[in-house]
Length: 153
Length: 302
Ligand SMILES: [Zn+2]
Image (cartoon, rainbow over all chains, first blue to last red; front, side):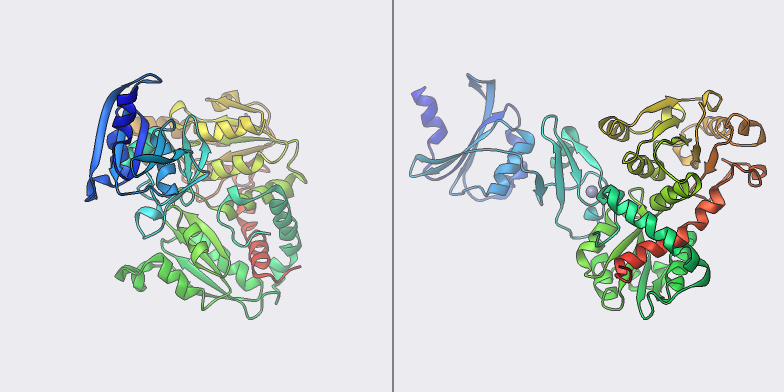
């Protein structure tokens, strides 16, 4: 137990996203654009975990996620937790929670949607959280979890 | 009160009632004209041709005493040169008191309304919404029967891709109606619309054959488009199976027949002169209904 705690919080400062659904760490990396950061990012996949059997962990040094980024994680892994680290200590624990509207982070899966043709900040209204169903504010098409994952790549 | 008319989803029942009542008041003015909107200018932005809808809006604005500027062909405007929709709208709102827009991209009218300070009316955004069509459909039914509550409305043909019937089903769900959905399996009403009917406790029946039609008050026929079928033979069969002509008319009793027009072969010409035909009246109702919408958004009626 002690060694696991250590593994999770062993960054000096930054963010640790824990309890990500197994296999979804790479999607988290993608939606947070961590493939483009210059900071150190550590990805652990299929880590044994008491609660769900297996989990993924993503650690990002020197970066505190915005509330918007935190909520975007809820799209792909609603049970994830976000720990903000400062001086090797967890200073804040945030539960990821899907907001009622999701702005910017997703693109619409409808190729004929205006948001895919003009520079528009995307906006989706969350209709149901489980199973996930969101509706584009512009074209009014609804997207389910599989559509969301598809546009997240 | 509504600032724009973008989607039937934005409407509450009282908004619909207000417009239907106002449309009734507009009936005499739709023939004689008025100066209610004298000095007001409507920008008419048709990024794709839709002559019927466009002329109906123009006629409505003229009957209110206002005038119309705009375009109906993107070739002649800067749009072809790559100007964004947002820029076009930002320019036109400075020239006018309201904007009517038709654009094949879905959500374009919503975006226009967010950019514009003057009211925006959606005259069709791809396969998404065309709210004034729905309003005139409701108005037509109410005018014919004196009410919407207690009626049974059948929707016939392509219920899967038919934007008109989705919006109409959505709007009718605010009333005490029953629906009969008649289509081939491949063109059934989408699950999303069905779910909405269930959530709003609208009784509905799904049937496949015109021959199984129960007694109904209205039959709303839709265009069955060839592009929807992989197999051209399937298209021919389906088209014929739902065609309304003198012989299939006997299955429909006194039901009033509606259609968003233009029709292809869904309704035979011989039906036009029967008491069942309501589709030309329906098209004509576009004028008072659009007058009502314009007058309301322009703020020229109390
Ligand atoms: Zn969209």
